[in-house]
Length: 331
Ligand code: KG4
Ligand code: ZN
Image (cartoon, rainbow, N blue to C red; front, side):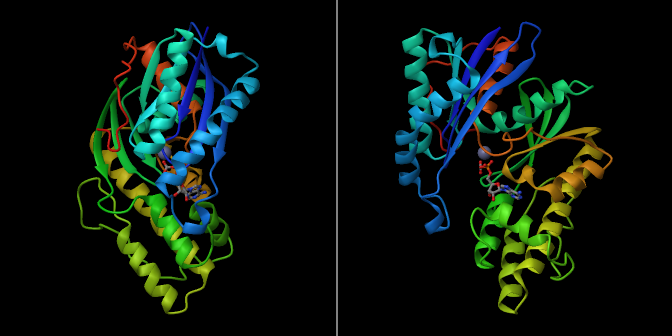
């Protein structure tokens, strides 16, 4: 059994997790600690320099917490992984350098991980414990504050990007609409909460990109429509309920089209927006087998990075070099 430490500092969460990779290939989350930065709330969005500084201040403590949650010492680690991109470069560098330094100090292999691969594997670990094994091919929808990406996972480690947002990410739309309606930050949970009291037909949103035959997404039109409805006096709860309903419908419709055309039966849905219960309900009720990450693994975290490294180790991928840098846009 090998213990892998995973670090994610790609945005505004300092995440450190520990995963045990068993000889039979099973990967098990032993610890998952996240420090969510709150300094950004007053700006209504993430301030990159402040994010980097907070990561520097917090990473030691989050790491100690993760080790004690796993009941291990630093010398028990067999590998270290950290996100190299995509993300905010200054923020990424903190976790990446920390991870590289640690691996050098311990004399264990280092794995640079792709943030989106982490999001996908966050759900894959959940699936392996159910009665079925998640094996490619399957679709993976990553819906977060920075991404709305639809992948066709054709084989272990081989991802084809088949669709993405043309403008704003889904989570970004949740955040911005919550802000304009005065519902708070981060907007996803605020919208979900307000939506419980609203009428999903209260505001007539037009579903985006109705004419397309491809697999792209768009959220900026909904944002503009929300602003106009807000100015026209729509209540925050109706706005929240109606926006959530149309956003979920859009995400599901495009995913179902891709599944039908490509003959896929399973979809992994992950990223912060995958915590949304309306979205989980709609995907769960569809004809697809929908797999979601377990608790604490939807939003950015370190355990998902350790899970991505576990998959890399399992498939025999060579460790990363120390010259693997931080990338704002990772292919
Ligand atoms: O994956 P994540 O933690 O960070 C990024 O990589 O972006 O995702 C954060 C996003 C935010 O936009 C947040 O508003 C959204 O996920 N989110 C939600 C919910 N919880 C978080 N969106 C909808 N419903 C939720 N319950
Ligand atoms: Zn993310």
